[in-house]
Length: 428
Image (cartoon, rainbow, N blue to C red):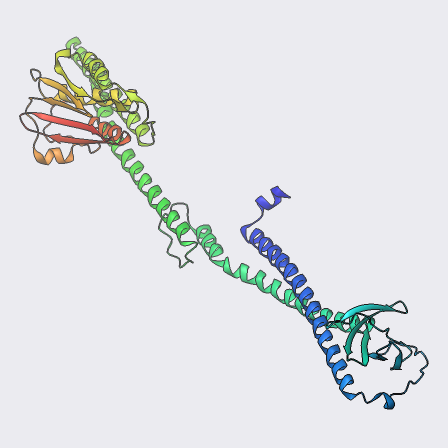
């Protein structure tokens, strides 16, 4: 049953829930209504019995005018009966053979007695000389009450029978916007990522907005993938074409020196292609990476290892009040390697490269020729290389740096004053 409810449609579950709660509410309300109706009718009949008693009491004459008349016991109970007694409890007159007994302790409220195995409700009116007992059988009384209660119950049942279908159709109609959204999504082509422009109720508007946000994110991701694929194909085409030329030259040249030079260039082309593919794979992996930022990282040790890997002296490192970083040690090491590789490539052979770590920021600087402000504005774009650049590369190193910094909630600031400086600061 539980698994069926979980797999059932929202409309079915909502309909069953509303109808069940409505039925339970109706049942409780009907029970209270019938009880109150029974109580109110009984109270009304008691008041009516007092009215009969008062009217009869006012119509009684003197004792000389009252005569006892014997009656045969009727085949059916009378609607109302009365008996009149004197002060000593002697019966003066009775309306039928159902003689209502004298009451020794009369009270100003009705009471129930048993007479000939029948329940009677009686009311009493008494003076110093006489006592009037007026009663009606419960059988007549209960029949009237049952008729009223039954009528009230049938009315409530009819109301439920009318209400349930109306609720069913109201729920189905209220869920129509969901079917409209479903139909719109079903009609869409797989590559249609345009936002949904449907008028929906306020309760469904967040769902529509989340879908539109998802469509925008998927569209942006696909656009990035298309640009990345196109740029990667373009960048790979150049070294592969050069590699083919060098191999063909080595095959066709009869001179050993030419073949040796062509093969050397071919090996350099293979190295450039390998480096490019490695960077492309690294960047593709970083695009969908997520890291745990609660891990503590010693940036001073990472910087020392990065200098060692780059073949630079440890004296290039300046650390002052270095704070602990949080993130992925391997990715931060990759960030440092890429920045140092760029500095070695483009600053010049005799340039001085320095790593300065202060609190939560790390600055890699060199005293090379630097770059213009227009170039700085574009550094970090994928496959961007300044015009006239003689060094080999794919223009992906700083893109990788920016992506790793983004994963670590860190900012990247580049400047060119007396060389080139790049500062990475992690937000605390």
